[in-house]
Length: 150
Image 1 (tube, helix red, strand yellow):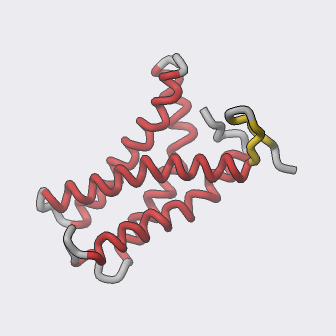
Image 2 (tube, helix red, strand yellow):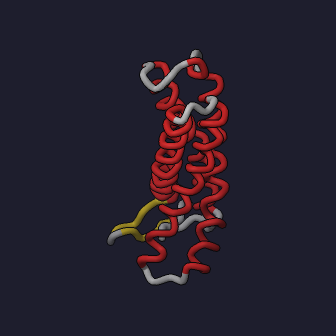
Image 3 (cartoon, one colour):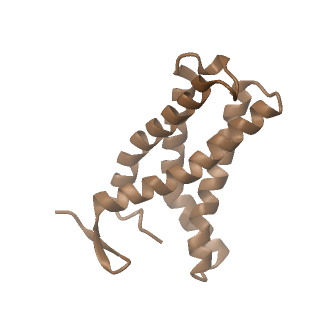
């Protein structure tokens, strides 16, 4: 039996909460991945180095986006940080792994630049794969009571 969570006045199933948590993670990871890879390529870094910059940026964006609602709710920075690291790390790590593996194995992506359609198709594919692999993790965390909407 699915547990239900309240969100904006209506009940939300574990599945819906996991979709929302994964979408939230995708926004942070996506912002980080795209900005990191684009910045790295613009600065003339190798694609692998750019991907590493994207991973770091993905974690930073993901954590910051997780912190903001907690800090707005007047939670202390220390408590909010502890909650975000506990609830976001596994989801971000899973999503980033899916994204990076897709970028590495997407045909032709490693040999393209920002002006090449293959680059952008590979990045879109990476984000889709990231969502697909992170969703089960978030669903599991919701079912275990680890992930709650802040």
